[in-house]
Image (cartoon, rainbow, N blue to C red):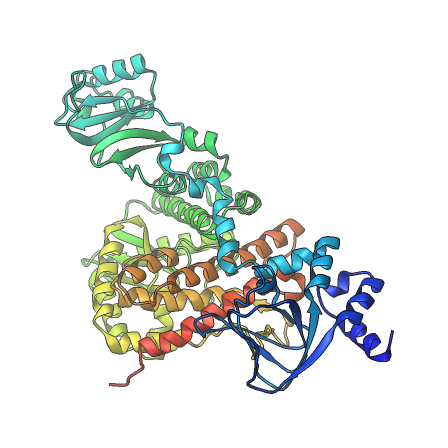
Length: 627
């Protein structure tokens, strides 16, 4: 080898995928390379032209563009380009331009093909480079059957129906004859003749447990109408819903039977056992276990099971929406049970109230590393002198209990145990109205937490009504939206000029990236702004994106980019936390780029770039004004 070729070989060995190849192979590649010089601003690859070389940046900087002219990537020394085009019929798909004066190595197609054939690591590297963020995220969704399967795929039996006028005895007899544990009670219905459609609509449900608790234990006559003991206005689900939605609905409502409707016709009744048979998942058992605990100590002892449930979901390839929803349901269930225990200890509440979950729990995006954010809505008749002591004790009991269960105290004091966050219905509307009308620094800080709210216990309809008020007022307040958008730009994705990761430079987590603070949080913040502008009352970020797109706020296709970016960053963060739990070390959100695979690093960069682009659009869409 000549001196120049030895220098080229030494350079190649510093960078993937050549660093995994045998020395003699790298030497062979070095002898085949041609070198070209490009001035800043000159075209290296033009869209549509033929290509027969793999390109590598030796020095300088290169920008890669999409067909529409948008910047796709920015490359520096040691990075490859052109492999996508070589793998796609030798036609340039992504144009390249020299950002600075640059030297480019050109590796012949024949050598590229030989390396792909001879070395799996090389083929994997270039093929994964071709794999888009969209494909990566699609695989995550498709890999979990509950997310992709409709409720009709569950092996649930057809419903057994009876008219609301029937007696309890007749209902019990029919359940025995049909060998079912649940009976659907119909209003304005009669058993149809053959060939004649049944009429009526669902009025309620009765189960074996209801017969035991509401009839026998309560001493109700079996000749009484079944309407006296049925569960009225039952939770239902549409036939086009997914099996995952059925599981989450049953977990959230803590029910064991779920009617499935086609219009107003009941077509199936899903039982807990149907989902368990279809897809074993400990979350359902865990919620039941939570609700059966009789003490705070009993709830706190479930921490290991909660962590195990999280790890199991990750290992079974659940996506971030499923995991976030499941963990949020578990968090809500703990909160609900703590409130029930608090009422048992303190007595019946003197006034109605609604306990609010805020932040990630309200968005169904909670993970295992989380603090508690909550608040109380109190009846407008609330009098601090008369009722204050009770609700202060109730809030303290719950906050202390959540801390014992692993949901640490909020360092910012956003908890119902803080008197500042126990307000009447009118006071909450006034507070939110003030934040929207006068979006100062403190108001905007509160908005990032309080504008994600969900009723957990008590008069949960008050939370829904408060969301209606917030959505209506925010949508018609351009100054507030502009201020909120400006605030959402404070947390930037961790990308440098060359799309290299910007890591922490000092402290406990130096050389790492906080995927919550620099990834999922900026995305959630900007999606929230768009959702408020659209008048959406949704809380979950993915559901908010659906509403935003229907409102026509985002350019076509950008909702898919945002969805994919949020999903991919979330899953890297989730897998990191699961790995920490398995290793028995303290869970955190900080990932070291060097610990990630090449595939993860490439797609993380693309996801962060989507966030950066979305923040630029946010600045344009909601101009800040001081008027």
